Image (cartoon, rainbow over all chains, first blue to last red; front, side, top):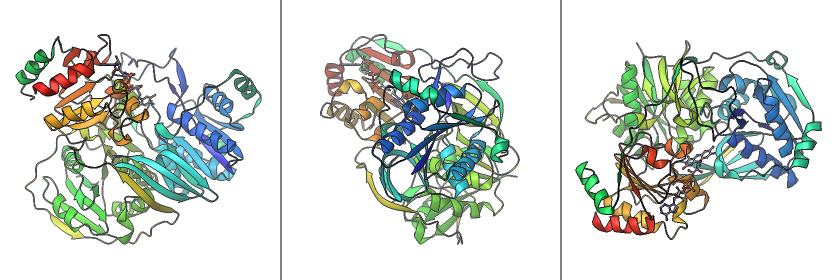
Length: 248
Length: 311
Ligand SMILES: Cc1cc2nc3c(=O)[nH]c(=O)nc-3n(C[C@H](O)[C@H](O)[C@H](O)COP(=O)(O)OP(=O)(O)OC[C@H]3O[C@@H](n4cnc5c(N)ncnc54)[C@H](O)[C@@H]3O)c2cc1C
């Protein structure tokens, strides 16, 4: 069984975001980037399924500029067999990404598309669902457990009410939530081996994909800041402060 | 003029309170506002929705396939409803809304606006990115606007309306290949995290699920809902539905207690709209104190029981 894993290069989750003074966006130059944490989890899940003998080939896909290659090398170090780089320097919004992923999914005859449930830069949480829609496939989003059984998958999903389990026929799209697994620590030999694996570069035109209508960014602004509060020394002071604000 | 369709969420015959906040966002857009209730028998939910301010009409879509809110089943029905001339399709920013909305947007061939936190016009909105550390103002292109609404950003509309309820049938067939197996839902013996006026959250510092009783006791004393950091959920102290933050629940209570929580940006993303944040942490340098309105440095194992006794 072939599976596709889509991975995105994003500003590292530990970085304190700076907004450009002219409001044209977030500062990304010279800032540490890494694989979107949710995509790492998606990647790890695919590798574990391969280790269990349930998956035969893992293809990692990224969309974006030249630096996306670093992210694909990381995916290959995790254990992807090969990688596809949809090269595009401009901004790629979820619907366009979904069109490209759907085209690759079909071309490769994959059985599962694994993605992170959201990317921590745009926080959109759309690509998996949109790709499933374009392919008319079942979707199981926000997965915290995946069990493959031949032509079906049982997926436990983290939802507001608790945990929901769905059974989906394959092929299907699965998006990973945080508790699906803990991604492995990459070892040097794996990183070295990854350098020898192939990355195929393709363009939207090669895939027969056109950019979808997109949202236009008007401006990027910092969120309202909370003013610094007061420190109290004792529980009695805390209780008085709460009472003074009419909160208890 | 805009013609807005809001997809109502419900469970066990009860309307999800998020609708009243989506209605507030819809009123900012302006125009006619219809609410769709997709259920097996949506009569009681539709009747409840009809009482909310701003609703023009409630569409009750009864369909045997709608026993569970499954995205692949709901999306084609919503796409069919969209054909009735709607300019906007709005969803609450719940896990169900986030699951279904992109599927609808993709089928309609339009981009989606996720987590609308402010409405500037019928096509221009603010939404958070980078865990709420930047706010993007976007303009939607021509065509239907599909959006999810960040519930914590809007104040619920009042009740007192009596909008018409119209039964509507849809012909969209349910796609095969997706089956509901089970749900493991938390017992609802405490106020719901997303609508509670007071929330007490505990973090990794609690150390065990037994120790979490300290948090529950304080919460019960003040009638609060209970939340947790990701670390507390990952460590198995509490179930996943209690996680507050970027990837958990985004909440806006009047009063929030962060106890033994360091204040990582991903956690703060979930509490930015809390009116008053109280932090209890033994580390005076903990980042949570940078956003807390009232901070107390101390050991939670002595401070919290004392606080509970004095409230
Ligand atoms: C992609 C991504 C998404 C994430 N999403 C979320 C999310 O939605 N929600 C979330 O919460 N986190 C999220 N996180 C995790 C987040 O980065 C932090 O790791 C997490 O919030 C830490 O939880 P904590 O504050 O309980 O634990 P810690 O950071 O370990 O903090 C524990 C705190 O307890 C204090 N303490 C210890 N003992 C005591 C005591 N006896 N009395 C008082 N104080 C004490 C310590 O001083 C410390 O400040 C996410 C991370 C990533 C990468």
